[in-house]
Length: 140
Image (cartoon, rainbow, N blue to C red; front, side, top):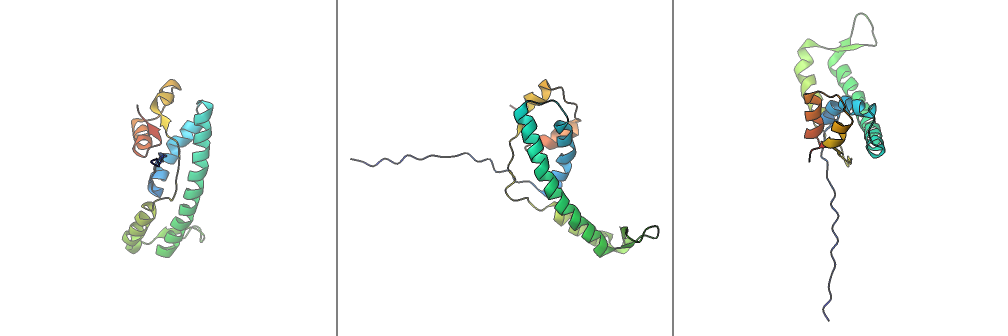
């Protein structure tokens, strides 16, 4: 008798996304969160926004550290910093490195474009493009 092996394969959608992409998609996703969507999609959007907020909070702390590293306190408020003119290029280089960091294990379920059409959600072409580009919204 031959021994047959049954192979089971699970399709896991790997969503490679950077902090910069999360930053770009955060606002349009908040618009979706305030829209009337089917319950599954509303849950997904809320869950995704919670994860995005955690990631962006971490990156914001690092951005502030970079501003302090390359900046000086402002005259109006000693607790507020501004990047020094001679350090702008170095700041921008490091800030771009921060935004290019890929977020580990960022899993989400895309919303079908049809759901957005049925809900009459108003997003700009740029916002829809960003959501589609990074996989948050999928067409047919």
